[in-house]
Length: 180
Image (cartoon, rainbow, N blue to C red):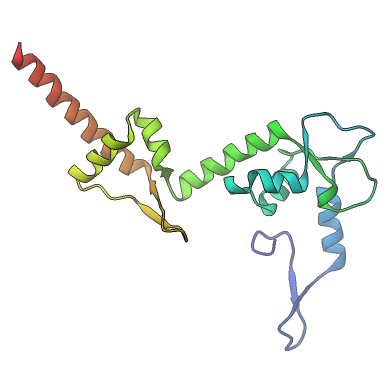
């Protein structure tokens, strides 16, 4: 919350603890509180359930607050007073926001290996072969705790792969013509 600029920390004297203005916190909570309704539509999900369901997709509390403040998420609530945990969000709005989070990550880190496969319309084995034959490296490799690796490719790297792919297709077409 602090790094995004929603709250300003205060450090008193030589204390290691940081504090926040209570009015600033209350104001943020009011701005993020949903509209009060008597009955919720069926496609709304509770705040906590949104975090559980979509945390694997990199959706964070800060993202939810940002999308709420920008108007992309329009929360509802049944109780007149409460916290963020009392908000309900429409599932389609959440999915739209997830797409924005994904696009921002693609710009920042690059495309996942799976996304590159979909974009180039080729299979996993062929993509690995192209990468190894042409000495193309991923722009970023994430090493997970369980030993798996996640590869990220930026647009320029994908265009290199695309170029190698089209060059390979030209050779195949030329061979077919020569065989006839």
